[in-house]
Amino acid sequence: MNVAYEWNQTSGYDWRRSTDARQYHRQQSVDAGMPQIQLSELADLEAQMGRYEGEHRNLIEKIKSVYVLEDEVAVWEFLNTHRRLAPVLVLAEPHLRRCFGDAVLSLRSNSDEHGWEMLYTFVQWPGSPEQAMQALDAFDDEWWLANSYPAGSNLTFTYRLT
Image (cartoon, rainbow, N blue to C red; front, side):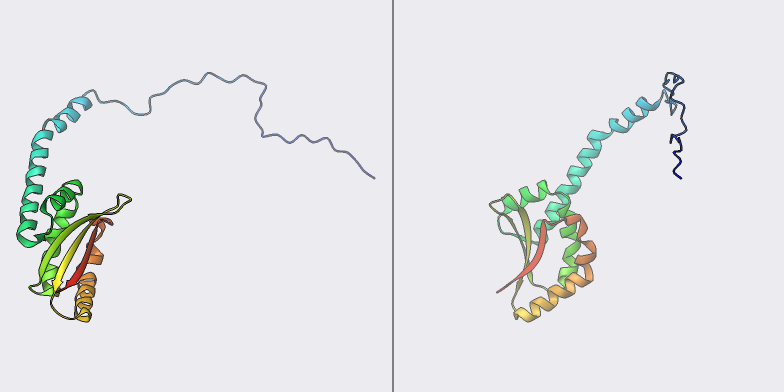
């Protein structure tokens, strides 16, 4: 015997009654002193920018004293555009010296036809390619792999045989 059951499936909400108008309720209280605090933080902005620029110039001077700049204007422009690289280059120098000894370090800026920019750090290596690869692997393991994040993909350490 087939019995048809009348069963209405509902969400349980009674749609027949009217809904109350939604009212705006402030979620957070606003402190009247907040804009003044923000302005006071920005009041020192010019001085902060001046200090930042001075620190960057000092890093560039340190880089010039350690690395040979193959095209000084191009490298300077690259380091001004990618300011996060200057501290990385300064910090990398003692580790490069530990792995490569007194080899000459040089910098070269390069960009390809698609606009991809790269700064190359070359170690002028007088020994064999195998020795250079071992020293580069040691540099990678000792320091570069753990500290490469700030440089992004704009900095490469490699060698040139002399």
